[in-house]
Image 1: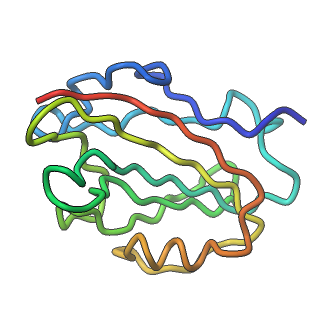
Image 2: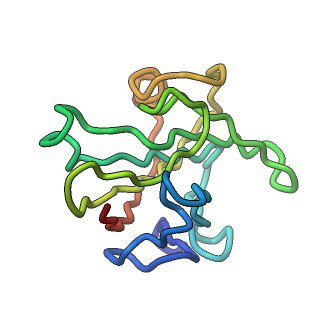
Image 3: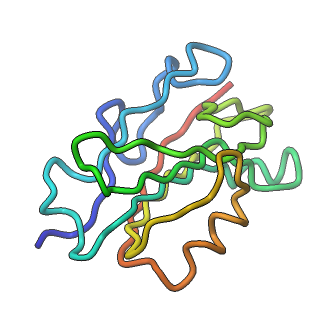
Length: 148
C-alpha cells in the first residue's frame, strides 16, 4: 500500500491557490484528491475528512479561520455524498481564501477514519474533531497561499 496523500488538481503543495477558488472571486471548491487510486487508502478506511483553515488569520482576527469542513462516508464508493460543517463565514459549504491583510498560508488536512461519522450538516470543527478521536488511521496535509 502507498502512503496516504492529499493532492489537488488546481495547485501544487505550497503554491498559490488560484483566484477562482478565492472567496471574493468565483469561490470554486479546489479539486482535492487522495491520490489517483484507492491503493492510497489505508485498509479499513470507512470515512475521509477534509478540513481547510487559515492559521495566519490569528494575527488579523484573533483565531484560526475555518474555511471548509467536510466528511464523506465511503459505504458507496460509486456515489459518496459529502456532509458539510459550518465554516467561520457562517456557511455550510466551502468558502475560499479571503485574507484581510497580507498573503496567508492555508492548510488542507485529510484524515482517513476507521469508522463512519453521523454528524448532522452544520457541525462545528470541534464536534468533528471530537468525533474523529481514536478513529484516525492516517492523515495528510497540503498547503497553498493566497494574497488579497
